[in-house]
Image (cartoon, rainbow, N blue to C red; front, side, top):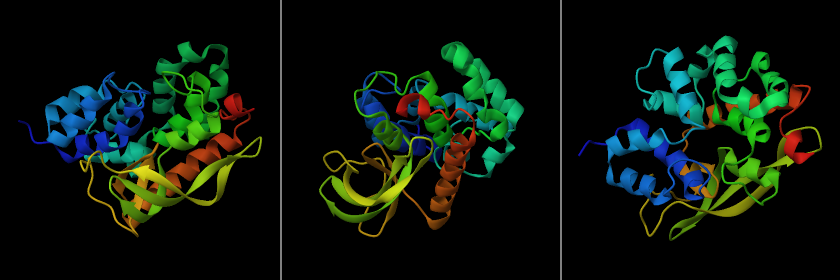
Length: 255
């Protein structure tokens, strides 16, 4: 057995929630959870390539920063949470990557997506959610939920654990808002999310007071003050970016 390195495990923690819903990644979602929980590093390496939304961004971050492994922890952290590695991806590299991947899918609306490139688009998950998803189709398998709810659940958000009972936790966090032109944040709410399946988790146990990262209805990881600051700052940067361009991508699905 190959010991699971930190990078692949971190990737699995954040990638499992949408995969469990059938939105991205391997067609059998229990596979990712099982191999990550078992520590099958080689399997994670293979499964990660099935995430055709996330993995090309990891490859871009790694290439620009001279890192051989796209699942190096530094690369994975930059994509899901945010780090200075993103600053090294210039507009030319980002533009070429987006052009190759999305111009054929977006068609005549490519120019609208491309507005974000000189404005500061970087390969952070928040950019993909706010700046790309609304142009290319929110989710692979389609969905019937309100698009604002989908954008909110797709992003990596943060919150504070209030209580834990069994496999679930109550977390205090803020939801996205849309005023017809701009994304923002609403008043704090409490919601129940999952952190384990029958006591099995990909992360460490959480308790009241822990600040955590959330993806869909799952706790992905605990956040140190520094990681929380990075996630908040890089998310705000991408929200400000899509709010500022002439054709903000969320308007394509939110009206």
